[in-house]
Structure formats: structure tokens, C-alpha cells
Image 1 (cartoon, rainbow, N blue to C red):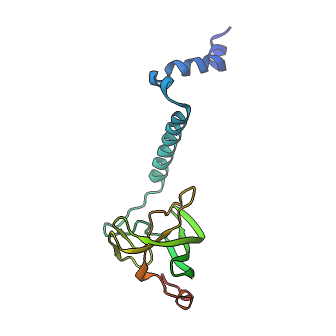
Image 2: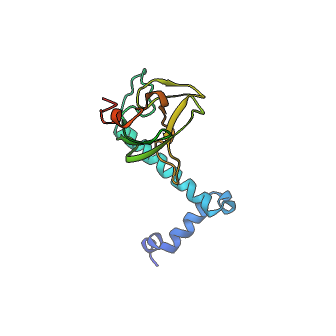
Image 3: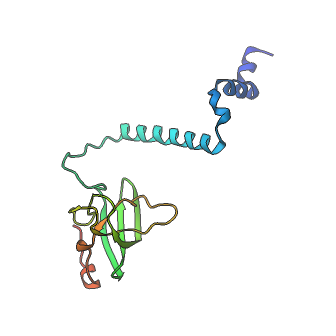
Length: 157
């Protein structure tokens, strides 16, 4: 067997990779190994993307989703709303259901830009599995159009 065939041999490569693996890897469950590999891959991908596409953010930019286009499409009831959400950086939802709730943390209204304090009445994306990308977004109840007539006009410019 030549030196080249030893290097190119898949079995030899596999054994070499197993010997090079960390010693605690044998005690790690397959799902944990997969999660680490996925996290490592996503971190590397994000780092590469950010390096290739720098985007300076102004220091006074308080919105968690600064480029999101948010419009209230319909108000089926006083506790629900259908919202159009489009953010080039995260996600696009054409008809996303939002529900009335109480803010559990400080934040910024995605519709008006006003500050939200813990305990304020807000609307949030309905939780489902998998969790939506904009799950942390909130709209102040006071900024939400009250009826269908107000929805017809464009709420956010």
C-alpha cells in the first residue's frame, strides 16, 4: 500500500478523526453532540455573514427590530389582531396572529416606537411551535387601532 492510499483511505481518516476527538465526547449524548455541531456551525455562519455584510447601527436606535415593517391588517376581536410583519433581517409573516397580554419585561412598541414598561397592556405574537422569530416583539395596546375602520389606513409609515 502506498503512502497516498493510506492518506486517502476513508477508514484511516475515520480512525484518525475519532482519535483526535475530545475524550469527554464519549460521555456526551448524540443529541448534545448534534446541538454543539449546529451551534458551532450557526456561530461560524453568523460571524461570516456579519463580516461580509457590516451594518452600523445608530446609538439612539432603540427598536429591537429596526427595519421591520409592521401593519395591523385586521382586528377579529378586542383581544386579537392579524399583523403583517416583514423584517429583512429576521422573518416575514403575512398574516400573523397577535394576542393581548401583559408585558413581562421592558421593551419598545414595534408599531409606535414608544417605551413599554413591565405590566403595560400589550399585544404579542401568538406562541406556537416552533416559536416565531419575532416572539419578543410587542405592540402597546394603546397604539393598536381600535376598530376595522382605523386598520384600513397605513398605521406605520
